[in-house]
Amino acid sequence: MLTRPSPHLVEFVKGLGGPLLILGAGGKMGPTLAALALRAAEAGGRRLEVVAVSRFTDPTGQQWLEERGIRTIRCDLLDADDVARLPDAQTIIYLVGLKFGTTQSPSITWAINTLVPARICERYPRSQIVALSTGNVYPLSEVCLGGSMESDALTPIGEYANAAVGRERIFEFYSRRHAIQVAQLRLCYAVELRYGVLVDIARKVYANASLDLSNGYFNCLWQGDANEMILRALTLAESPPSAWNLCRPEIFSVREIASRLGVLLGRSPRFMGEEGTTALLVNASRICEKLGSPALPMDVLLRWIAHWVLAGGRTLGKPTHFEVRDGRY
Ligand SMILES: NC(=O)c1ccc[n+]([C@@H]2O[C@H](COP(=O)([O-])OP(=O)(O)OC[C@H]3O[C@@H](n4cnc5c(N)ncnc54)[C@H](OP(=O)(O)O)[C@@H]3O)[C@@H](O)[C@H]2O)c1
Image (cartoon, rainbow, N blue to C red; front, top):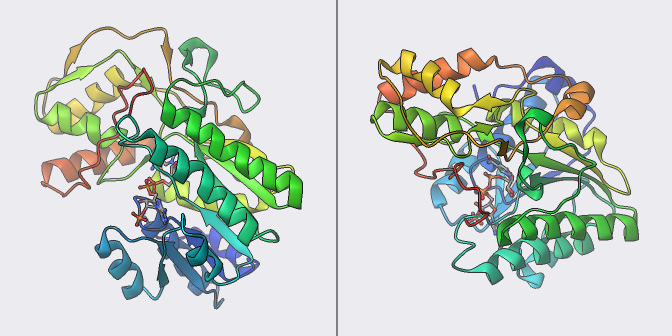
């Protein structure tokens, strides 16, 4: 389901310039994004070369991609010689990032989030790039305002969030300097059955653990929809770069979602603390207007996640730490 293309995507990929390079493909989103692009091309009778680039710290991701006919290249994108050897590409999806562990090693976080974009823009001055950013580039906002808009000031707290602002600014600098077409997508947050804020909530509810309500509201998006919108966002790339919030159009309450999952899991959720009036929230109305609203209904996603938890399905072991309000990851 994560890699099943919609008819809309199949049509879009027919006109896509190849090869399609996916940078930072070894993480949570890259493998399913690459497979989705390839399946869309195959469904449209198109031969599209999809190239997945990462260090592949987790070699199972590389093997999974190769088994599906996706060419992989092992590469440390901090290394200028490695980057110089990458194949030419007309279109690039940029997924590289570092979030967790920032508090312990801020310098690595800054290097990966700002030096790598510079290397890539210098290597690919004529490509079209969709660069993933994050809703963390905004400060917390009043829940009643409906989430930060793209025109709001990027004044977050914490080293990771500021390094993510740095990542955007480096792309902007090169986009303006070389007229590179770039769309920056401020994702907030992808969810599938093996990770994501809904999985974190569901697992706590099932384990009868208390849920912290201090960050009481959140955004999210089924990763299949996120990947589809990321690919179609190539049409939004321009110079100077455009910026788009990416998530479902609704704001969700931790308390309400936990209660709905509680019904599906046969548990009564436990809570601690109270909801504050602010949370890390974005408003995705602009991208939904451009590309259409995400296809998968929320109640279906909640049923899938509850079923996965009840069935003992595996997780990636990567909690989102969505409770964090002080920017320390
Ligand atoms: N998933 C979400 O919910 C979410 C939410 C907000 C924003 N985002 C943004 O979307 C992007 C993709 O998300 P994701 O969840 O797939 O992130 P992720 O799991 O952190 O994957 C990014 C991958 O980039 C690769 N990478 C890091 N440094 C590298 C280097 N020096 N050279 C080559 N590859 C490198 C790493 O894979 P290797 O170890 O294999 O190199 C890493 O797993 C991220 O950059 C993030 O900022 C994601």
